[in-house]
Image (cartoon, rainbow, N blue to C red):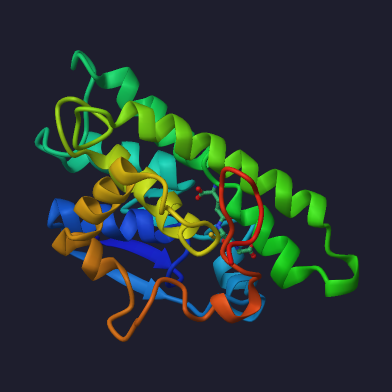
Length: 228
Ligand SMILES: N[C@@H](CCC(=O)N[C@@H](CS)C(=O)NCC(=O)O)C(=O)O
């Protein structure tokens, strides 16, 4: 039975799609519009009980959570290029970044809530400010860590860069990377990869151009304030 990925364009399932392309695997891609009409059908809720994406199906295994999918794909299908398995000196830094991507480096989901799902009159400037600063602190830490290295791990590009890469992709819609030269270089390197290009919609002009019109101005991640 082939691998199947349930996906919505430019959401967290992009991590799994990007990694599947890096690994060069054959898979079936089920792309759904990002709305409850498609994500909350009886059929899809039988695959993912919360109706979220990504979900990966591989034979008898149905797996959700983008971090778990990254670990699974590396353990099951990688020859050491993208995963760092048990016994590798960077096994735990590898896991650290995969988890960091989806726990701390994802304040943008709360910003989307504020801008897209909460009516303007109920929107909280304090939440937007706090989440922008939370993102800024992550970016400051990563800027320091990237001194003298091209990727998060000393051993080179890995699935950790894919997990963090999606969070960065999401972040660029909300904050400017102007004051982060190493992060800018890092982001350019990872998004120049053919597998990344294949994971974004072919007709896309800018990251998340469907979401951008609903969002506020780009912010400075160090002050939390709008730019310009
Ligand atoms: N921690 C999960 C988060 C999954 C998640 O919340 N995905 C969002 C898209 S980015 C989703 O499916 N949202 C649809 C919804 O909540 O209805 C992961 O990393 O896979």
